[in-house]
Image 1 (tube, rainbow, N blue to C red):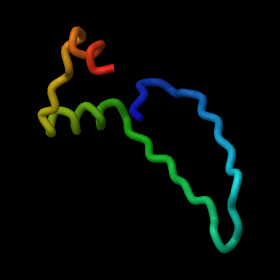
Image 2: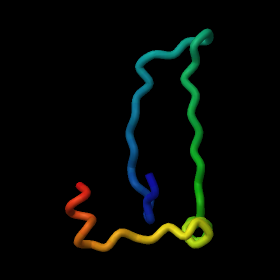
Image 3: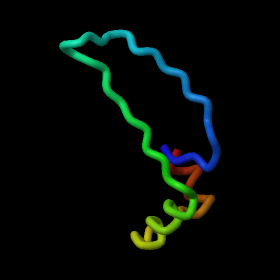
Length: 55
């Protein structure tokens, strides 16, 4: 997921132990870093009229 603003996220670990730990990480990018990656990859944005059809 890429979000242009901070979004509240709630989660709950329901099963973890020293033998089988729950692991996670958070990776943050600036908007400029995301734009640079999109420009380098030459990904074209989907036109709005096609966006509704793909949902």
